[in-house]
Image (cartoon, rainbow, N blue to C red; front, side):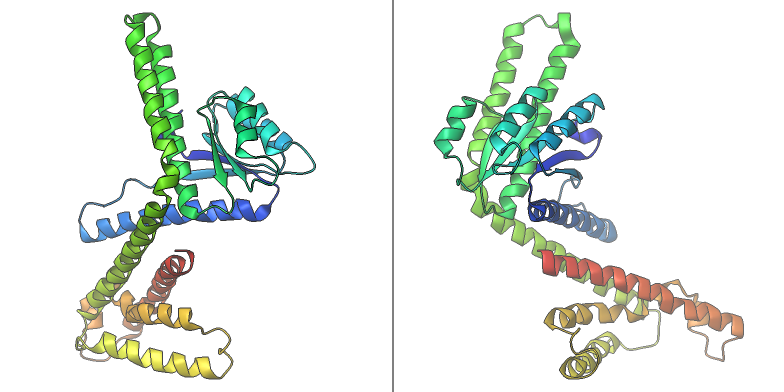
Amino acid sequence: MTPNDGPIRLLVIDDNQAIHDDIRKTLRQRKSEQSLDAAAAALFGVPSSSDDAAEYEIDSAYQGEDALRMVQAALAENRPYQVAFTDVRMPPGWDGIETTERIFAADPELQVVLCTAYSDYSIGQIVKRFQRTDRLLILKKPFDIAEVTLLAAALTEKWRLTRQARETIDNQGTQIIDLESVLRLVKDSHSQLETKATSLADQSDELSRELRRRTMEAFETCEVAAMALAQLAESRDLETGEHLTRMQETGQLIARRLAERGPYASQIDPDFLIDFHRATPLHDIGKVGIPDAILLKPGRLTASEFEVLKNHRLEAGGFKRFVSYGLKSFTHEG
C-alpha cells in the first residue's frame, strides 16, 4: 500500500489533547485550501493550480505503550502509518525517546518527528541515543503550522519512495541482473531525501508566506464564485444590475445597527459583518432553478406555481449557509 492507494496515515503520540487538535486543524486547513481551489477550477472551466488534495487519516495515542500497540496492529492489517509525531515528555509511561526506539523496532519504515522543548534531552543526547538514522527528525516546540504541513508532506513522500524502492527489489527478485545499479538507485534516493529533509528549517519562513498567499487566493476565488452565482440568478429577473449592491449596503446598515443594541448585539462582531456582506448577494440564488414561465410570468401566479416559486428561498438558504461556512473557515483558520 502507498499513500496514492488511500489516505495518508499519521499517528500523533502526545499526552496533551491540544497538540492532537492543533495538528488535525493544520492538516485539515491544507486539505480545505486545495479542495476549494479544485472546486473553483471546475466552476470556471480552467485547470486547477493545485495537485489533488492529500487526505490525512490521523490517529491519536496518549502514551507510548498505546502507540506501540497501534503501530503493531496497523502493520498486521497492512495499513501501516507513514509518519508519527511523538512528544518527548509523556508521564507517567515511556518518554518519547523510548517510544521511538520501540516503534522503530516494530516498523522499520515508519518516519518519526520528535517534538521537544529541550527540557529533558539536548540535541546531542538525542543524536547519541539514536546514532545515525535517516528516519528521525527533531521539531522544536512551539512549532509553526508550515513546519507541520511540510514535514507531513515530505516524510510521507520519503516513506513512499523508500517503500517503492524496497517493493521494486522484492518484486523483481531474481530478474535483477545489476544489483549494484539498484543499490546505487536506492542510495541516491535516500541522499536526495536526506538533503530535502535537512533544508526544511531554512524553508520555514518561505513556506509560511506561501501558505498565507495560497489561503488568500482560495479565499478570493470563493468570493468571485459567490458573486458570479449571484449575478447568474439576477440575470433571469427584471431587476437592474445595481440590485445586488443595494442589498449588500442595506443589509450592512441593518446589521451594524443590530450590532449596537438589541438581542443580537453579542453575536454580531466584525467577522460576522464581513461574512454577512459576502453572503448577501446570494439571497435569491434559488431563482436559478425556477422555470422562466413562472419567474417571469406577468400575471398572477396559480397556487401550484406559487408553491414552486417558494422553493427558491429554501434552496438559497442552504447554499448561503455553505458559502458562509466556507468563507468563515478561511477567515478564522487561515
